[in-house]
Length: 229
Picture 1 (cartoon, rainbow, N blue to C red):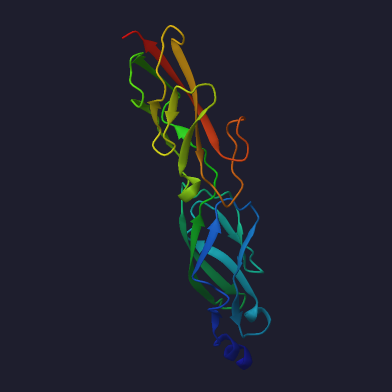
Picture 2: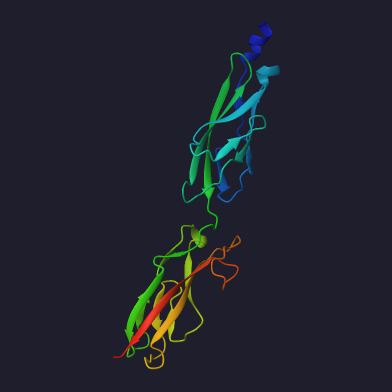
């Protein structure tokens, strides 16, 4: 009995090297993936020194789980940085002694971006009427799109898929300009297919338009009606 009382006075604690204060996790990690191994020590023997780990707070969305025996922190449900980009988990370790002792530490989890969102035009189609006397170089319309991803994953560039040399688009601004004189009698209507694609460079890129493979893109229609002056 005396020995047991002495053992229960010893400390239960997390080591600085075995328990980081901040970790970074990519949002596309699959369910079940191991993130980090958390470890605590207890110098007691027997059940007094046997430890179990739990997440005791900070995970209201149930995105994580910790293996009770090993201390491995795992992905429990899919992450989405665009919804939540940071978690502060309260990790608690208990021993199995009587009375039971415990120790807790906070773990900051920063969610990193993956290229999991495609560009989206602000409207499905555009329709513009212009005069056939419109000078070359005139800006006709500006198309715009959004991408929820960060950095290069969310930076969008525009292009016109083939079919016309009468118009050009600024790849950064989406502004469409006239590049050749227009002739309503020859071409009363011009239909342009505009592509917006992100600039992801360090991971596989999503494919939205079948014309382009190997990058994230979405196409929209731009309809021009050429009128007599």
